[in-house]
Image 1 (cartoon, rainbow, N blue to C red):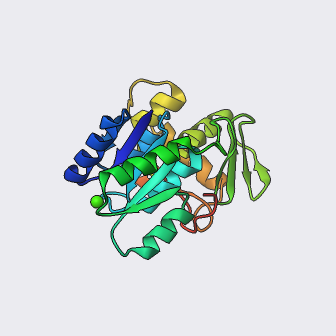
Image 2 (cartoon, rainbow, N blue to C red; image 1 turned 90 degrees about the vertical axis):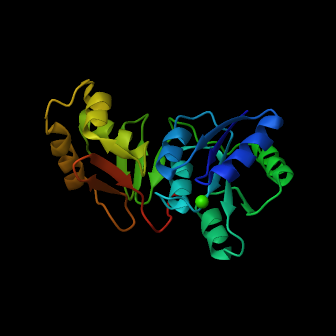
Image 3 (cartoon, rainbow, N blue to C red; image 1 turned 135 degrees about the vertical axis):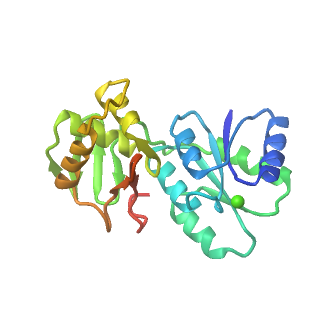
Length: 230
Ligand code: CA
């Protein structure tokens, strides 16, 4: 059984890794939220242990991003007394939480319980709801507040790639490779043009996700901040 640990404190990560490996779990550690999301979305993790205090992304946003597209169980690690964090985290789709500092045996027990908890499983071919957008990979269709918005095949492929990687910066080269099948950037601005099409066709910001420009690098899908769709 595979467990993903997203924790920037190497000492905590080490303790968690040892405790879980001793019990036969296969453990992967990521030290940043961005890498954590990317790793979680590769699939195959029964449980994700998520520190809420991360250097790059807010742990709550990581939680939301993973919950939107994955059925991995999420166990949050929070600082003592951060009651608000725990409530927000559970609202954002976390399954359980543990307060630091914790006993390794307690952590192992929680992970074991979560890994046994039966599904309500979202599958990769089911529609993904992100705020006011609903994106259905099987129908290759996007709905905005229930209304279908017509996208071309390429626009949909681009949107789906973004939706599968919320909060992750996708470079132009990554997008060209994945959506256009080109293995080099070649100075093409086709990605920018298509991002422009999506921005024209889909409402963004507020209760909708938003395609943010990461200047000089690429694009990143920001999830709506009101927690809808989690
Ligand atoms: Ca931390």
